Image (tube, rainbow, N blue to C red):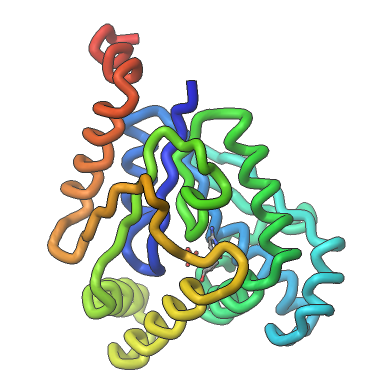
Length: 232
Ligand code: DC
């Protein structure tokens, strides 16, 4: 049966942190789809393309091959054979990913890759359109959100820990703009699927969110709970 989990929500809600933990607890493979859009972003930046150049980006899609592999259970992203995992979190890459992901050619390519991954193995996949477009038959759909202020504070702390200079009000502004773009694009905008469960993580910690998703999954997919109890 279908054991997949789809997790959607705005940037900085904690989707990837939580999804990795849920994956470990439930024996699912974690797939970070934002990383795939980011790899495409690196390719467009390397080609010197402007994010406004839809025709150029659409044509360039033909020359970009994004593939995924796992090393010690951690997702590695390859762009035309080169491992680009270490560059995915750069701000310029995130911005290009957000801007270029509005184009249907980019989305079609990434959706196909994501669907073929989910056909091979049960996954927990996070992104913006997983419950609505990529895995509409997922066994459980989560819409994970948190207030803009809280998401900006978390990002601020993350950057501070890395020793990167940052301004909280600027981060808030970037998050607002990214939310707007992700929610208002024509193709596959971020929205909560009708059958998704909304989890607002503003006042919840990572453990609480993880537990909530794991218990929802065990209710929905009782065979999994049964097998775990039997120690299989
Ligand atoms: O989740 P993230 O911040 O790594 O994603 C980077 C950008 O990629 C995000 O701003 C929008 C885009 N994206 C998307 O359009 N659809 C997805 N399923 C995942 C990410």
